[in-house]
Length: 603
Ligand code: ADP
Ligand code: MG
Image 1 (cartoon, protein in one colour):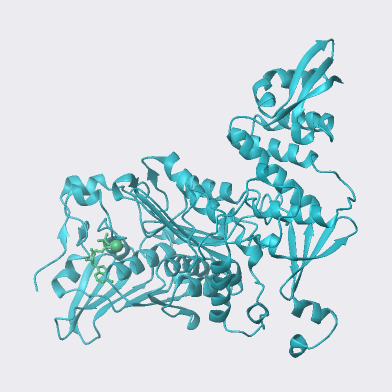
Image 2 (cartoon, helix red, strand yellow):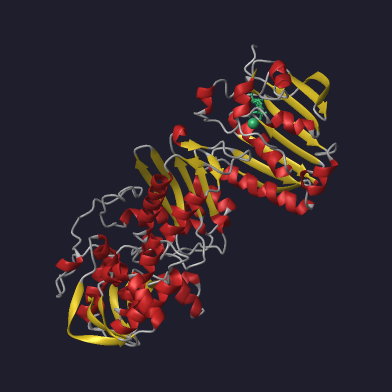
């Protein structure tokens, strides 16, 4: 068997980011498991003892190595994955530096055993501190097994940096989760101090997420499928029920590698703005594929950071891909109007639930939007395209041929002149009418703004307002921005200003209070926040003032009109501040309140 592994030429070796790969047990496991994945393994077992300090063992059923290659693999810059500069620009495998095995071997006692399918037996190499001690034949299955004992035994300084066994094994676990999420087709097992932590059977991404992130996540996961020239974005994103207080639920991958990147994270958070509460983080697993030439993953030895050639573009695509799915708030149709499917019983198998979700998705009829057309549910009903634009919306009831989710609800009535009660199949739906109005107003303001300006209304008699020096200064500094919101304010003399025009949406409500709030927001935010974010928050403010607070009795035609408008509104599941517009109480939940048994559901 000829050798596949070569020693990289010096110049190429030097071009690869230098640095220590091996900093802690999890880093060792990462390199070893990535090698197993690169070797085409379908079954990978990781076993550690004492946080990896005593033992790390990775066993795979991949291609294995010949005796010659196994010996070569322990040499610095020996790799079968890269031979020229051109390859470096197109790195498709996870490993590419030919640095991991020798680095790990040099700080441990290592037993490397490997067998190719073409040989009858394997080779076992024992090395100490990087020095090969014995090489012998070894009976074994095809694949590779690497045992690392006494990590850092010969570098006491680094030994000191290791944390407690619990901490280190936690890092190993998290690392394995990242890898396992990226390759649901591979079986992963993790044993820690002789106890099995998990066995992830080969399956799909949904089942991996259920195993590793949240077993109840399946009902609120939504497929992303987005392709633009030079980029594709796929995966599953969580709805508003799946938030976390930190970014630990963000699993993003570039060309198969887990990455933690500011540009990517920012785009994701932006896409969720207004969908989940401020300060909360979503849960998602998203794979970004872009040409190798457009991304440099060679920035940092641990390879979590990347550098994009066109940052802005990548940001926009991720935002569009995820925002496109979220803007349709697909979770509001989670339980559908066909009761047979909607009544989940707790022990119903996850697969069933999933198909329920897929059904709901298929029935869901997203508004058409050119750029964000990447959302393709499993089997989408052809869009009837009968959605009306807001300005075309007739005041009177158009009848029952409306297609959207909100219009499909059977209205029961109004509660406390604040909530609309509806029935969705067997479920009870409560809609916060203020939140709904706010969402409609906000989306409308956003689209007006995007089209060139917010509709403004001249006041018959200009209204005067007294501004403090601070407020007046802010008004001058942000004159263009304030005008863009639909206000026309002139200096009148002294501290007095005259308001001549206001955003039409708030002409009849509290535009004075709105203006003051906007000024104070501008004063506070202008230093800390990006322009677009600021605009959003100002628009939310205007939207907020367009809604009559307190109780507000609605007639049936007004309720119907509101629901119709919600169907035309993106992000219809939440108000601009991220609070829910709609809450659904299922029949089983109601029955539970009345202490009725589940089997009574059909009565
Ligand atoms: P790299 O992965 O960057 O090439 P490594 O030092 O991690 O460098 O590995 C060196 C070489 O050893 C790899 O290129 C590969 O040919 C071989 N190798 C390492 N681990 C395995 C494995 N589990 N199965 C098969 N071949 C392996
Ligand atoms: Mg490697």
